[in-house]
Length: 602
Figure 1 (cartoon, rainbow, N blue to C red):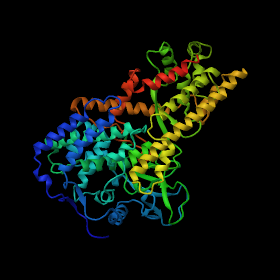
Figure 2 (cartoon, rainbow, N blue to C red):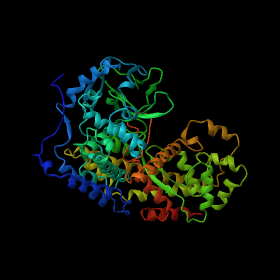
Figure 3 (cartoon, helix red, strand yellow):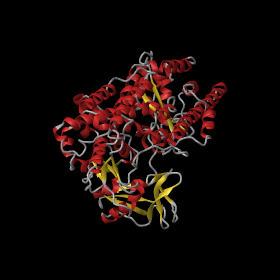
Figure 4 (cartoon, rainbow, N blue to C red):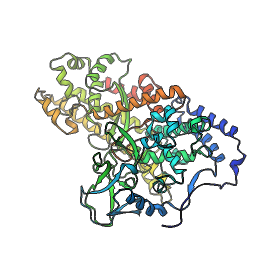
């Protein structure tokens, strides 16, 4: 099992930290908290703010050099101890082993043939690190007093992890010692590596992730040094930025939702051993067995001995994989690019359009997505664009016309156009908007492909370039799709082709079909957004009392489906403010140009 491990505090760095007084450190921490709590920067100033925050963080890291907690030995040294601990506590450990793979790194390897849908892995609740176990730990007293920890389970879980890592007698130490010592998320990128993402659509999420992590660290540094209920935490003498970055990254890349013991609520959990599985395309094959009170995983497919065992992390975009997980998945069939759209409140037909959208359950301003698949838009986005491009007469048809209520159900159905003219407008709008977004990139797709051929690229550079290239390819497909659809419907209009006749009987087809293109509206995404909004409200209430912040958790069904530092209060507030003020400078040129296209043909 190799040499015995022990928790220790680094003493490297020539004792530089000894010259830093608590007062000096607190002054820098206060400066960081103030900088990170300031309003969102003006459009075009985001990079400047990021560099300023990063500079303060680097000053802190330099002063804290040599204070982070580390373990003797390598991660690999502790895998036998993890397997023995798992077996002792009721987890399955037969039929697989932990192995190192050339592309993905450590993962699970089958030691025998495993059939598809065979239950091969289970982890009992007592092995899981959860928000509930955090409440019952040394963190409990502070948790009971701190609104941020109460509002945000992911942060509570990160502190639970830090406290247990610092305890040499922790029950979870065999698991904690096998966690990576660092990660490949943008929190670990060098400034030059982040620069490669500057023109990517995902860059604001990268900025927000860093800003919110820095703000959380500064806030909790003050709490740990001053709050009476933090005095017994094993972090008081050494709570470094690197430690906090490691903890939030461990949670961000591994957290999952499980039901509470009574099954009435969900809670967040880290699931040892199971979180060693790497991702591939497929279906979610992990669930929670309340009767046996354990997490269970069945095989995604047939595996032969010596093959790697994969699970499906969920329908994440590559931006989400890079930001929250630190990898780019080359064959991601669920890749997409976010696109912000809204009906201008200054538009003459705003009230009518907003009412039709409301009846369809769609916000008048929201963030949608362009997909890598064909068609590049969901039924929900199709419905929005149809209403966005409606004439006054068409709006009246959907508000007070015959079968107006029933016709709302056809808005997201590709088989029932509002009119040929409306279809031409919406696809022209989409083509123009995607083309405008493409112009914001500083490099071409061809240039990015050439860069990726360089043999000396670092891993971070590579995934940054892959991400911005993938975004461009999705936008290029959207342009091509928009053009093809526009030409198709233009031909229909010129031919005088009759519109598909709407029948009341079509409602049953719309409601019962499982095809996305047949759905009247995809409400699942909206419901998720509403849930996020509720958490955002809780976060805002907490922040109003403590004048500090964290990030809003976006929950999913499977490993690493839960974003921590990106879908947070700053991102949501910035998006909301931009959409509330329709003349927001960052989108004026794009929206004005696209509106000219849409309105010019009415």
